[in-house]
Figure 1 (cartoon, rainbow, N blue to C red):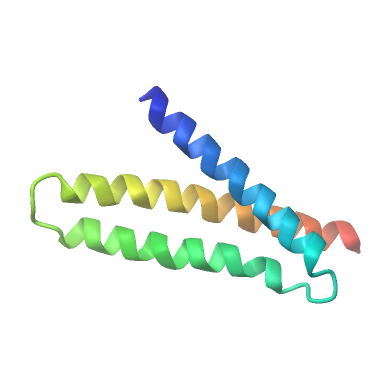
Figure 2: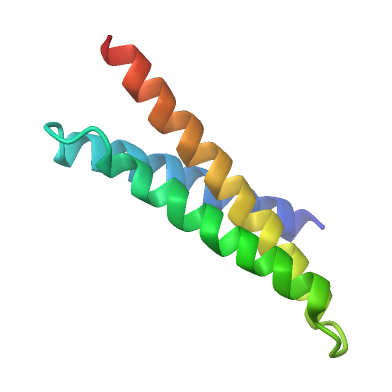
Length: 89
């Protein structure tokens, strides 16, 4: 359980860092930093769908854990992108 928490924290830290990096590299385009949350959201929806339809052994549990990890990345990068947008105003 501790390893899973560390994995989630690592994904959160990396997604925040990537959102900050995208904001710094592409200052002219404010929508480019929302690519990362969109990708995380698409992959989390896919993981959730597969976890609900998987019938093989522990595959459903693995995809549910992947959904949780991707959703944590989505939330952290989306909130970071929103904070960066509202901080500029």
